[in-house]
Length: 453
Ligand SMILES: [Zn+2]
Image 1 (cartoon, rainbow, N blue to C red):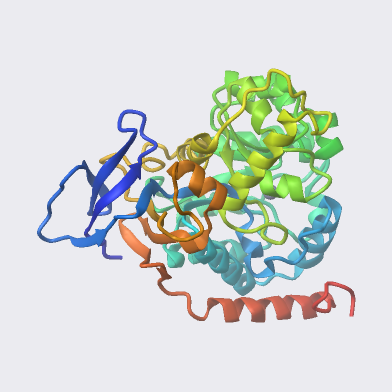
Image 2: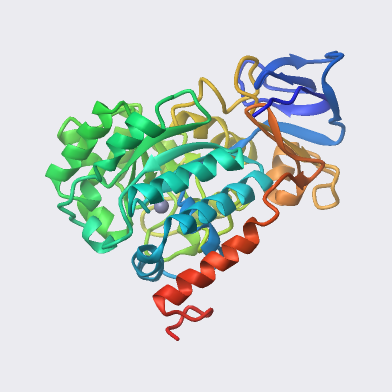
């Protein structure tokens, strides 16, 4: 796909690059990369975008989303974890055809782009067949988003694949590595979504980790899930068996112990907090953001499932902040002890949602900050909209008041996917998503309300 040559003039740049900091200035984008940053840049060939009244940031990086559920958006905001598992993963997941995965992923990607997400780590536990996997990957190429595709397990017989499962990771991951996602510098790359010792037997966990490393793939793992996670102590067991490594990202960590969180730091591993999901959905535990900071881990942030929470990072940042304020007030759950826990502010949240996301995905050499030479993944947020005025502190304004409607321009790998507040393409996607939803509900014998009918 052709690259755009763009010069953004007169914006406020929050670079997330420690050396550059925040500055008023211009950004030149060409050949897919950030060429130059500074005051008064000139370029005769570039299309000029007026950046006055805006903040330019590296795009948001969502380090954990189950994109395949994009057409099931908003089904159960009041569900518990068990309701989500039984209705979506076990209930509907088995009826997904490759075309449903494709449209779900596409819907999720487009909403992400619209809301300023330039990279998504797609936790794809819908590997029901090789065709399902290929359909998921094809959607990421089509949408234009940067995607880290995490190959997971099937949603057919979903129960047999979790909570003590003795099944090893689907062997199809070898084919995907060999034939489909071979280039680790491409816009769509491959990781392994493993179940680890929390969801599979110790033998399977070790087998799968060795498989991922043999294939040269980074690893994500859901851990610290509710009371089950507290009993399993997956991170501690990985450390004990010599398997914990810097190639791992631990998702949730809600009921992982403080000692386990310190092990993440000691091994150079990373974490993903799905703060909105964790506060909305009973059964997982509470966001570990402040405990991770106390352990020496600056976390990334993630949406998780759009069946329950909104697919944008504004809500995720606000939920993390809301929960922190409960911790500070001493009103949070028993896992958190308010005195002495470090806190974070709006500027920290923007770094969690950008550069820390890139670190968690192992792509911070290519994206996550406005650094000349990195890929041009950036967003322009209007802070002269009524809901943000007077935007005294731009970071605070974006975190407290921002929404997708304020995202004016989104550039991924040097291509403008949203400009002037208008998302490009995808006109028929949401119709197709509704048709997919109807087909899935019919297959599962559900009525629109989610009850049997
Ligand atoms: Zn998840």
